[in-house]
Length: 126
Image (cartoon, rainbow, N blue to C red; front, side, top):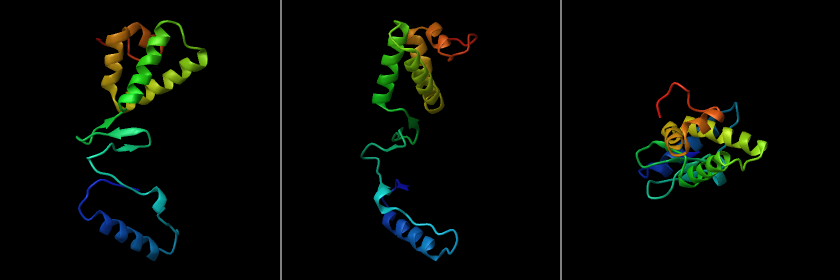
């Protein structure tokens, strides 16, 4: 469970715990070890996705760099078939989270390489 607002966060958390204690079926319990109280002061990363201060989803700087490096390696023929499949999965994930990143990759490395990976339609403008 994730909480983002500072005001009354602990009160809300305790309220939810009380509600769950009173539910007979299904028996639910919050795992205190997995509960995070997050604020805009720090990085808010949940399941590999970054929530920026504008409440927009982002891949995060490190993942973008990793994908960019792999596209560069693909362009230069330095990826094994297994690594190409992994790159295709990363690009699919990136397209769902931050579609404009795919456009920037196409502009940087060439649309034809992303087409070979199955991204960018041939009728799209770069």
